[in-house]
Image (tube, rainbow, N blue to C red; front, top):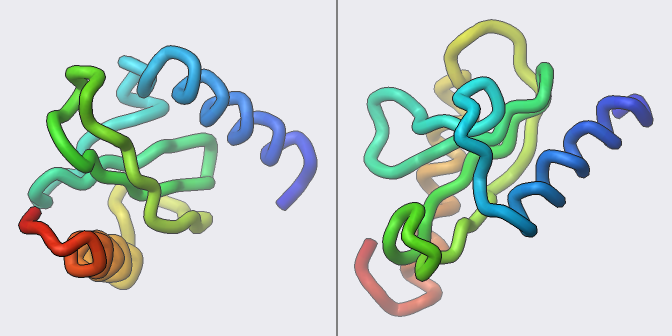
Length: 98
């Protein structure tokens, strides 16, 4: 990853740590057709995420699954499947339901 793209992605995550996810759908949005998956977007870099607890109320944690680079508007099916599998593994390890 080029240094400038890395800096922009780190700035997005720093903002999220300080203020919560951005309200700008160009930077953070729900993934269409999923149950509770979101994605951080910084140019072609993507990080799928989900809330562990209540969404956007300050009590739930935002769990990021993995990162990848993509082109186009939709999340590739393989990356979507990986994010869903990692979410399931998280809840299995936690010992609770989704």
